[in-house]
Each structure stands twice: as structure tokens, then as C-alpha cells.
Image (cartoon, rainbow, N blue to C red; front, side, top):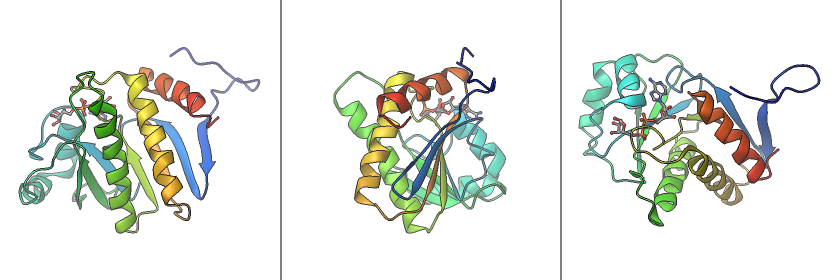
Length: 192
Ligand code: AR6
């Protein structure tokens, strides 16, 4: 990873406070990230798949699949919530379905809805922290840098409508390229 180091020789933290929320990009996968809610990049069936979805189901165990089967799927851009079962780092798993990237003008709208609907569910369930993966940027092919800007700008828009919410929002960078994309997006959104 080619990251600029500061005078102390450390890679600077990507974090900022927005209203009463704390927003940060963290290195590491979302599955074992300590947070009240972790977000799963699922598909419309909600019965598991590859990528982070497969890793979350593997870690949370068969009870998660049982719970997901009862949810009758999830539309693209929407989100549903379950318990975290065998995962002890989180209380809830929020399952959201990102768009398969097509270049259409609906892509950022649907991706932004994933973040905002997940934040709504976290709020409804009194979560103090939520951790997101970079939704749609793996199997679904959404370009990383564009997706990071959508993630941050949709979160900032949500916070404008929820100015009193005290929430720590983490964007998990599973791959070095994700961290680089968030660094650019933090700058583009004037967060650092
Ligand atoms: N642990 C943590 N993060 C991961 C892992 C992992 N094992 N694998 C990938 N990521 P993706 P999508 C990160 O492909 O593009 C599934 O089959 C990855 O680096 O999991 O939304 C679903 O069932 C990226 O940041 O999801 C759907 O069919 C993020 O997870 C489809 O893939 C999302 O990558 C959804 O595709």
C-alpha cells in the first residue's frame, strides 16, 4: 500500500466528527469488527453467497441462515436486520443488497440507499456503532473510488437529517485499494 506517512512516520488516521457522529475508515474485514451492528453485502435471496456474505454466514453459523430464510429476501437498496448468533463482536447483522454495477444513473442512488437504510435500522435498534464493508465493490463490480464517495456522501446526507444521533460509523477496508479509495473520498467529501 502506497500511503503517505506523517512527520511521526505513521499513516494518518482517516477519521472525523460530523455533528454528534464519529466517522472512520479502518483497516480489516467487517466480519470480526467490534460494533453493535455489522453490515453484510448480501444478495436479494438473503440465503448466503460468496465474498463477505459467505464469510459472515460461516462465522455466525446455521442459525443465521435460518433467520434469513424467514425474511423473504430483500430488494436492492433495502436492508433487513437479524441477530449475530455465533459472532460475539456484534449484536446485530444488517443485511443490505447493493446494485450490480451497470454504469446507470440508478447505481449511486441504490448504493446510497443501502447505507441510509442500514443507518435507519441501526438507529431503530439503539446501536451506538455500525461497521460497513465496501458494498457492491467485490462480486458486484462497483468501482471502488466511486463507491467510497457514495458511501460517505450518503452517510453525510443521512446525518444532516439525524443531527442528534451519536453513532460511530466505521468503513472497513478489507483490501489496501479500499483504504486508498476511502482516503480520496474523505478528501473529496472535505472530511479531512
Ligand atoms: N471478509 C471481509 N470482507 C470481505 C470478504 C471477507 N471474507 N470478502 C470480501 N470482502 P463482496 P458485493 C469485502 O464481493 O460486491 C456475495 O456472493 C470486499 O473487499 O462480498 O456487494 C453476495 O451473496 C468488499 O469490500 O460483495 C452477493 O451475491 C466487500 O466485502 C454478492 O457477493 C463487498 O464485496 C454481493 O457482491
